[in-house]
Length: 209
Ligand SMILES: [Zn+2]
Image (cartoon, rainbow, N blue to C red; front, side, top):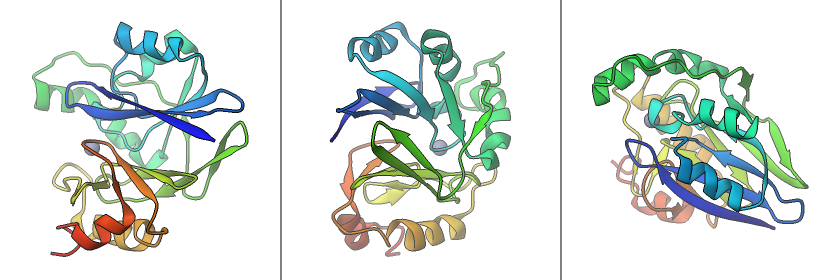
């Protein structure tokens, strides 16, 4: 059995999900938008063994905490290698979006690719490549829950006008990778409230456009 704790973190309120395998107390953090003290303390207080940080993509608002988490927990961060271009753009994006100068490139050296299985205890996490919002966008399927990053939001999808974004590609990813999952799968997006595959198939305004 897994439990999910949601933390809304970082400058653009991204959802960070702590997914805990209750038998082993091993956990992953899906996206890591800040390393502020209260966030780190909340993870410590939850009593888990944090195995990995899994990034849905390389945009700054989803990964600003990875270096601080490495310092606090010794935990490595994994991302699609196709999004390392995005990771290198983090200082530029911080300047563009927040007017912040002197940001550093997060240190990430571990990669996940489509079809990889990551384990916490006996729970399997499947990586599903869903390019479009970025080239290396990744969803993570755990049991009947999909962590969709900025690929799918409630009723919508992530923007495609940033570097390496492509609208036709995100539509293809959603139709061929996300909507082929069972309809009862719950979708936990990178921003905003959760949804389900059934709901999105019916109401997603991008796909039904
Ligand atoms: Zn994004």
